[in-house]
Structures are given as C-alpha cells and as structure tokens.
Image (cartoon, rainbow, N blue to C red; front, side, top):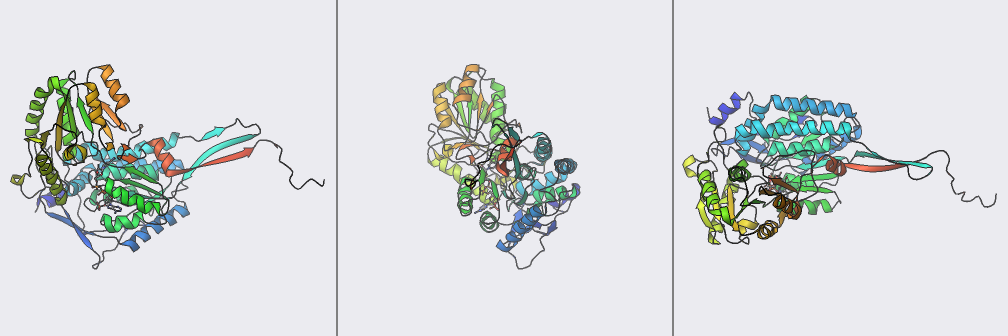
Length: 508
Ligand code: NDP
C-alpha cells in the first residue's frame, strides 16, 4: 500500500480513478475520449488520480445549470434563515470531516496536513459561519429627507458567479469565494486549479449534504487554458471572482471585458517585513519565519522581503539563518513537517529559476538555494535566504511564491518605508517595533491593503482584505462582498399624495 493509499484509508475516504466536474448535484460522467491531466502527490511525485477536463460545452452546461437554478429561486429566493441553516450545517460537516479534507488537500497541494487540519480546514468552516451571521444582521437603507416620499435601498443577488480558485490554499480560498457569493443568494460555477481538485470537490459534496440545493454550486475541472478560459469568456455570467496570478488576471479581465462582466481580483504580493532596531527581537524572528515559510512560501501574503535595521542586522541575520537551517522539511503527510514541497513540478522548476536568477544578479546566498533531492522525488526546495543590496533585483520585485526570502539592511525609517513601497504590489505589510510613532508612520505610509504590527497573520473576517496596485481589484469582506455580489435597488414610494404635474391637462 502506498503512503497515499494509507493516508486516504486512515482518513476514511477513497479516491476516484477519474476526477470529474460536478454539475446539478451530479458528477460529470466519465468520458474515455476526454482530455485528462494527471494529479500528483507533491511529497513523492506519485500519481494520485486523473482529472477529466471539462470542455467549453460542459462549461456551458454548468453555467446554464447555475442560471436555471437561479431562476427557479430555491436558493436565490430562499429565506435568510434557510441560507443560514445550510451554511451552518455545512460548516459543522466541514469541521467533522477536517482530517479527511486535510488529507485530500495535502495529497494534491503538498501543504503540511497537520497545518491543514488545524488551520486551513477550520478556516473554510469559519468563512461559512461568518457569512451566515452577517446576512442575519445586514441592513438596507432608508432615506426620508425628500418631503412626501420614502426611499428604500434593497439588494438582490447579482445572478451567476464564476469563481476561480488557485492551488496554494484551495479550501480556504475557494470557501471564501463560495461563502461571499452564495450568502447573498447567487448561484455559482467554481473552477478549482487543475492541480488541487480533490478537497474542494469534497467540500461541495458536504455543502449539498448540508442542504444546498443541487445546481446552486457547480464545479468545472480542467486546465486554466481550456476550462478556465471557457468560463471566463461565458456571456451568461454576472460576476467573476478570481484569486490567482496577475498574468492570468489580465486574460480573465480581457475576457470579462467582452461582456462587461464585473471582476473581483485577489492577486499576488511581494510584501515587506520591516524589523526596526527597537523590536522585540525573539518575536520578530519567530514572526518573520512564519511570514515567509508558512505554506512553504506559497502564500500571497508572504513577507518575502525582510528589511532589517542596521543596528540589529548582524544578529538578526545570524539568528534567522540558523532557524531557517533548522526547519523540518519533508513529507507533508508527516505531522512533524514544517515546510512541505512545492505544489507541482513546474512550480518547483520556476522557484529554482528564481533562485538561479537572484544569484546571477548578485544576491548573496546565505542558506538553501537548491532542490532537496535527498528527500526523494517530491518537489522540495530548501528554505532559502539571500542578502541583497538593491531592491531592484528580480528577487525583490517579482513574486517567487516559494520558500525564498531576501534580507536587506536599512539605516533609517524613511529608507525602510521607501523600500517597502518600491513595488508593483501592495497586498500586505509587516512591521516589528516597540515605538508607537514608528508603528503609526508605517500604518499611515505603507501602500498595502492589510498591515500587521508585531504579529504575523491574524485574520479578522470583519475587516476588508485585498491589495493596492497590482495586488488586486476590490476587497474580500462582508460589506465588500455584499457590494460586489448584489445589485442595489432604490425604490421611491409616495407618502400620501404628493402633487404630480398634469401633462396634457391644459384644456381643462
Ligand atoms: P493562476 O493565475 O495560475 O490560476 C488561478 C486560477 O485561474 C486557477 O484555477 C487556474 O487554473 C485558472 N486559470 C489559469 N489560466 C486561466 C485562463 N486563461 N482563464 C481562466 N482561468 C485560468 O494562479 P495560481 O494558481 O498560480 O496561484 C498563485 C497566484 O495566486 C499567486 O500569484 C498568488 O499570489 C495569488 N494568490 C492571491 C491571493 C490573494 O488573496 N490575494 C491568495 C492566494 C494566491 P489552473 O491552475 O488549472 O491552470
């Protein structure tokens, strides 16, 4: 029995031979003639299953199914209480199946299963619970300033949403898109990444088990170039929510422009992690390690540019490199693993190319810098630290999306803030200091959608999340999701009988 089979059996689940889409509450039938993509376990390179590609006609079926479901109204016109009940039941089922979902995600994405079970799977449930709560308290607006009239502003669901999820945190990110769109009565077609279809498909099945009407949430599987492009180009979708890379986002936006479909983009980052000389040194070391090596660095909020102040730089770099060398890299199914593999082979190659380019551009390698072939055929990259003198290196300007960090030394606060903002991205920023003045300057001057001061990631679902500049368009968040996934409607009602001009009554 392979390690995959053992893990899957231990989690009480089974793998399909062929993974297909899910439309109208049913799996898309297996078609021997359809294109297939192999799905591999990044920890060993073993094949997990084959994925059947949904072509343009199957994507059209999925969109039609979502449209018909929307028109029938069993979800789009369901009561708030019904939607809350389904979301909360689904959240409970997700928590009950946390180990199963973690294994299914681990064997596709290669993320450490212990982290998945304890953090990312519960996050999917939290997203559903949060939106269930929100729709129970959200309110419309009433205006009564206009004498003789009352104006109310209500919202109705936008219609059919196309949701595009990436491979780096499939459940956590797809669940945010699903919760944000379905909460307000939309129906949807979701396209997960071809590399990570399993956990998302299982979550959708659990949502239907919880009472989500079939046809409300449909899944199409396949490559971005075929299945993704067909969905983005559909004339019959009302909203596009996309989490992924900037290059793909440009293609999706061009497709959306044909039909003037509104887009919501959560894209990449190259975020600064500033360590001032008055920081709590140990917390800054701990947090900076978490900020870059969580999810093996495959995370949009990675603190991939460490900026450290001159006075503590030598000590910081020494301690940071020592801890980086001590990270436990290995099989993500092993509960002691801290850093897993890259999610797929081509991505491992891409990360290694970034490392080679950094060296050729003059960055000083302090540790790592190579594949970990000693760990077998998995797609491992050794946690890598570079010291750099210039922020213009490709390493400091382009998203590597792997366990690779640059450290640059700065003299004063102005220099740190200028370096932090010298980026095409503006997703998040981190700052470590015990000075209120410095923290406030950072808060006021850094161009980023989210700032963390003296802490790594702590997500508050009430707050907006998204990026400045090329890190995105729009924000996740409750009010922000309501704005994007609904149409607002103003209704003006006469109170009593305010006068109406009597056109055509001149002869009277
Ligand atoms: P991609 O842009 O490659 O893919 C995102 C999704 O779009 C996938 O489902 C992909 O399918 C699909 N896709 C690819 N090509 C097309 C196309 N032509 N038309 C329509 N859909 C397409 O991103 P990655 O999967 O590589 O994810 C990593 C990126 O996501 C990073 O840049 C990261 O920073 C960003 N990200 C941003 C987050 C945020 O909240 N701001 C959070 C997490 C990640 P397939 O994979 O099958 O090709």
